[in-house]
Length: 102
Length: 474
Picture 1 (cartoon, each protein chain N blue to C red):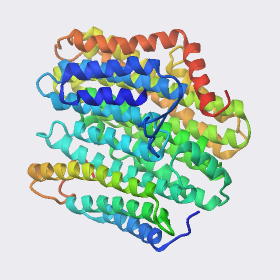
Picture 2 (picture 1 turned 90 degrees about the vertical axis):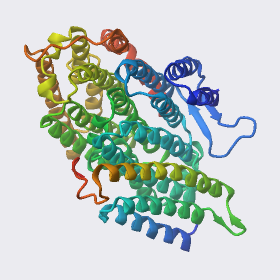
Picture 3 (picture 1 turned 120 degrees about the vertical axis):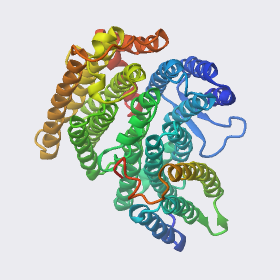
Picture 4 (picture 1 turned 180 degrees about the vertical axis):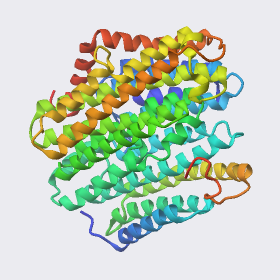
């Protein structure tokens, strides 16, 4: 088992920050930023777990590159929805966009 | 060969309608020919972490998924005549390839990539009618919840990678059996249950589903409720039962989540005025039943009662088949009606069975199957899940789960019967019967229900063989 290194610990903290952001923020853009932070924490976690004496395991590098691409696609879609929501409601505040009971 | 299927379908992505249909039919034919085994996505230069595994069970589920996809695409020609452009069919084809890939993945990271392909097309399909407010809001909510779920699962995958140095499920099983740190495994199992539970909409994480499924066009709702929620469930079963070492707490977590989903789903369904929202809540309840079944199987495996474990898991997958067919059939039938009435409210749908006899008859088949009243195929899955639980009557948790589950089955049978009553009621305005292009795919799904009800042994025994292979008992 890879010993718990600073990267893995930072990843846990970052994951918690992202979750907190999604749970508490009321601005749609900040929610999307929360998603990005969680995605980054997963990348960091893969890096921390793949850390060897002579660098980072190539498997971990591949995971991170692919995850970056996947989350970029999803976040682009998310920002598209945010733009549409802004057009429908004229606001980014989730407490005002509450017709479906957030 | 499996890789060939995806390429086959992805090449068609810029062409619309008929090409989606042709692509899905082709992959259906190819998937019938798939031989069980392990395939790498790049056979000439094998990639690490890009492995697909075909076993009899996942092959059967794949065939079922593609049949439902075919029905939904065919149904879309009339339903989406004005609104459906080439991007609509492209997204459906992408969703099909993502789901089939996710179903066959033998690696957590491959699963994540395919799942994101499927669910990203799902978000876009829910928000497809972006000129209305509701689909956009529902799609954003769906995206937020499901992406968090998928990333939580991926985080668990990164921890597994740290513990075992791989995300390949077969290698993980070997590596984890040598790891002796129950606390780490428990944390990973918890993250996996939360992540996959969010993707499958188990109760505390379900809030996105009752918004997303009704807001989508009807054929897409049929796919989301009938097909998409099943893939994370299959993965939960596979990961917890065959990959991670057994832990006593996990079965309680599954039983608790499952019974809670059953209760909340059914209770919330009762008060809905919107027919599609009603069905969406009932999907949550059905996800709950299947989770209870996985929990029962887990308990039985831990206790060494292999026969009971096989029974419970067979129940899960028989129920998965019945629910997939029944729920998508019902959503498609509602599509026929909603296309006429332009409203999803029960009050405006009431009595359609009399005005649209063919649609009415087909929805009755679906309703009977979902209600699970004995001679119908829908009964057998529920019965086997129950059988999996009755083995542990001396355990209060299992007994409580059993009682809640039985109450839920009765409640569900009751409200589906009430639904059927409202369908057949003598009232409502004149409605035109749906065109053949909508009725034929529905009739095909209904025929499946009828055949499965006439020969339940075929279905149950077929699934049982697959389950034994999955649990490594063949």
